[in-house]
Structure formats: C-alpha cells, structure tokens
Image (cartoon, rainbow, N blue to C red; front, side, top):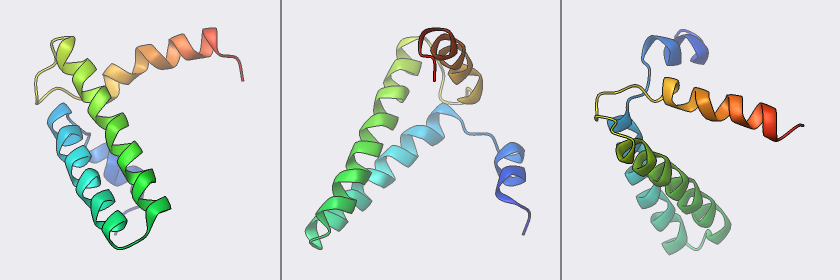
Length: 86
C-alpha cells in the first residue's frame, strides 16, 4: 500500500466528501458516548462540528459539492501566517 501522503494527493477531498466525513464522525462520536467513552466521544463530536462549519462556510461562499477542499483552505493559511505568528 502506498504511503498516506501519496494516497491523499492522488484522491483530493471534495466539499461533499467533507460533509460525508463529518456525518460519519458525528455518529462515531455518539457510539463512543453511548459506550461510556466520554472523552473520545466528545473529541469526535467536536471534530465533526469543525468539519460541518467548514462545509457550511464553503457552501455559503458558493462552493459546489464537487469542488476541492484544499484550494479553499489556502487563503486561511496565508491569513493565519500573517496574523497569528507562531
């Protein structure tokens, strides 16, 4: 199996993929909560919300489900580098 980096680059994520992933992580988080794994469940629910918010922002900006996510993240990276020094 090729390295993860190669697999990610050869199959870039779309806006629709982000919506599907957020839904999957939401339900995985619920399953963990029900199983008594509160910390892990809450973590996944938070991750799911983060993806939902990004997806909502992309759609609000006019993204289509088939649009790539990567190029839409570039502008925030540039902004963060200039405004949020490490």
